[in-house]
Image 1 (cartoon, rainbow, N blue to C red):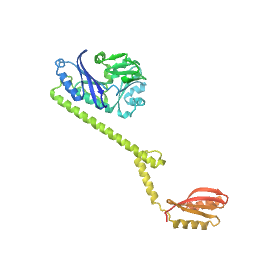
Image 2: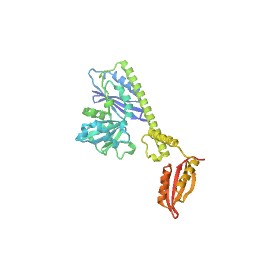
Image 3: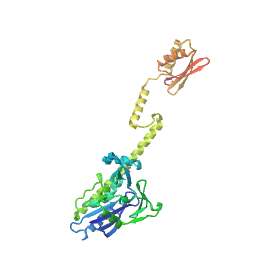
Image 4: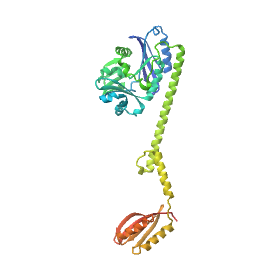
Amino acid sequence: MQRLIVQLRETTSCDHLVADWWFFDGLQLTSQGNAISPEQMATTWQHLQQQAAFAKQGRLVEVVLFAPAHRVHMRLLNVSKGQGRHLNRVLPYLMEPFLGQSVDEMHFVAAPAQDEKVWAFAVAHSHMLAWQIWSAVFTDYRVSLFALPCLLSTTATEKVTELLGECFQFQCEQWCWLPKNLMPQQATSVLDGISVNQILNQSKTWARFNLLQARYQVRCQRNTTLQPWRWAAVLSLLAFSAYSLNTYLDTQSLNQQAQYWETTANQAFLKLLPEEGRVVNLTRQMAARLQHVREVSAEQVASAYEVLTMLDSVRDDTAKTQGLQSIAWQPQSYRFEWRTNSRTELERIQQILSSKGVELEQTVRQEQGYLGVFRAQGVAL
């Protein structure tokens, strides 16, 4: 079998990738190099296929891509038998406590480990789309995309291992990527491209760790040399994939802006109307508030003359009380005080005024009797 191993690396940003590659004929390394773009990788791949050794009849070809070291979360999870039967459904919820972003934005893959344990992988959809542009170069061959530490799954220890120039350590049931300037200790073992090829040759069970599953699954069309016209189709596919990725990233940016303005609007609404408590549906709550304002505005309010006439009629009905003490205009209302000799008389006054739309604000007991403070809606003179 011939195998092409490609390690993707990020440079200035997550969507700017380069690749190191090694091409093996069996266990022999025949060539290696690097590519700074999918287009350059496609050209290199075409040259490799034109080599005589590559074109041997019946020769199988396998392409193995490794994702950027720090972009895939790989964790060992305990699962019950019930969870194991529905692992694809429950995996996002089992992984959610260990992730720093919404599970809706993540792609999940699980593979059996031992007993009631599984290896779980989580990676953002945006990264998968970026890596698919590179895997599209090899669509007519068996393509796999792995997280680098999956090669260490059988030797999960706390010793630091360097793999294709990246360092990993197994801690707290997770394979952790270690920046070289923050490594707690020197790597106890170093695995280069030749070592990786040997590990891949030892077993065919690596397919269970393939990240190209579910929506990202790649079907191998054939395993023979592509005709020259096919490369035009491949390059067109690469261009379309790049366009799709840019569209997706633009959509993500717009969604983030929409979320920002929605949060800002909610905060402004609560600042103006703190009595609302929280925002459940801003549109409905604003509509309800506007309706309330319209209803209040539509209510008939009394003029100063009507208020004084009303108070005069109440005074005639309650001649035995001490009567009106003061009246004052406040914004949109009249505030007045009424004193009675007893609480019973004050309650009777309250009933009369309530029937006329006047509210009792406060009752004060005094030496001369009881003082009631009332408020009536009205308009200024």
